Length: 153
Image 1 (tube, one colour):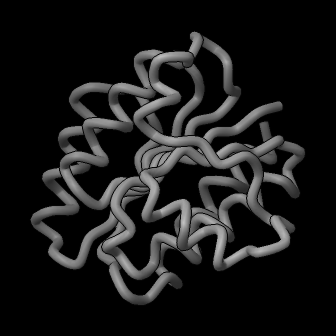
Image 2 (cartoon, rainbow, N blue to C red):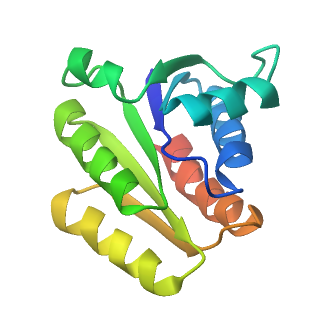
């Protein structure tokens, strides 16, 4: 099984540790993990896991769009904390046509609701939405629940 984690701008402090954590958890579930991100997010990931113990293949979020194929991945996990991230998630979702989880988070609950609506109105993805930004624990708890469902399938 293959999973693709989608990361945008690394502005949210919780994103990088949660990406490493998500990759670890998905590998525990038997997924081969790739991460598509912008160059800044990729640099943060490389520094966070210098021996690549938890991360899989790192891909450029823009460049890999050209080569994506339907059903190339068994799971899409997108970190959505900006409207651009929601747009990328929706685009990848429609190209891949696979099981998908959108992890929607922001400091401002109105933005969480806005990004949730964007994803919900354009996909059938499972949406995990939480008000969080600096503290990764609310994200981790909600992600763990979503991933537990995957393990039960």
